Image 1 (cartoon, one colour):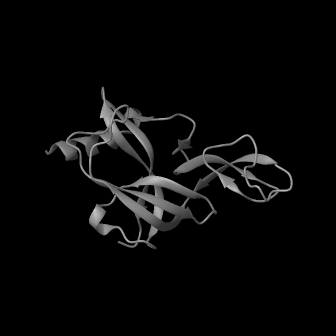
Image 2 (tube, rainbow, N blue to C red; image 1 turned 30 degrees about the vertical axis):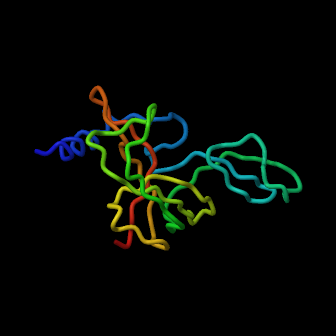
Image 3 (cartoon, rainbow, N blue to C red; image 1 turned 180 degrees about the vertical axis):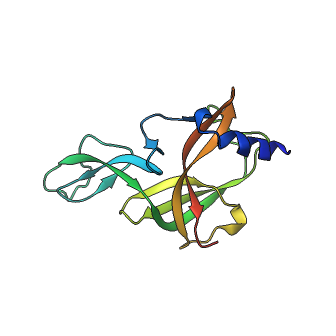
Length: 151
């Protein structure tokens, strides 16, 4: 079994999964980002905010909401070098794409892509997923990512 396969096996055991940043996302009812939306102007926010930052908004009225599902890859960049501390990653470092995704719910969000860099296409349909970003002490530390749908 390769190191990468061992990490995949470890990440599929839900008892060992732990969010990197608790409260930003959940996966119990499918992958969801926990954000907010101004009900006055409909501007979405992730992460949550205390007040609307849209300068055209007549009255800030923020409510908590969740975002998930599918969207479209608006742009991406390739991380082809290991990030500096305090960021953690599984070794050996493997280059990955960081995508800017327009979710169908109206939220534009940045996240790591799970598919190979060579597969990225601006405009491709993607789905929100919760996947490990690193493993430590028998735990898979998870974050939100995006997976290509029409690969």
